[in-house]
Length: 102
Ligand code: HEC
Image (cartoon, rainbow, N blue to C red; front, side):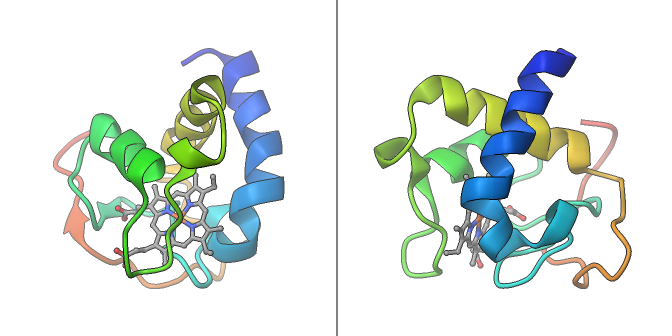
């Protein structure tokens, strides 16, 4: 995904996601987005689906009811770019190891 899209996603992240996913995605209330594990599926499409629909009963809001679709694409591109950056002080990995560079 191209850089302007990721940068726009980073700005959205600061406002809407950082309160629960921490600085640089290292995890806080929500899981660490910088490791190579994923709770809900393993693909980028799975990630976007989780952002869109949220996780009912687990505290992850359904962002498709809050932000326009284009912003969800931006934030998903940013979140995907965080994978494998292993932010310092990150929350322990949760879920399934990602099978490959996806
Ligand atoms: C109110 C807290 C909260 C906010 C705000 C929040 N999240 Fe989450 N998020 C969570 C929690 C809690 C989970 C884990 C749900 C579970 O245990 O299944 C989660 C899960 C996720 C996952 C799935 C991770 C995985 O391993 O499958 C992604 C991706 C994600 N959030 C991205 C985002 C993005 C992007 C935003 C901002 C648009 C955001 N979240 C805002 C709490 C939040």
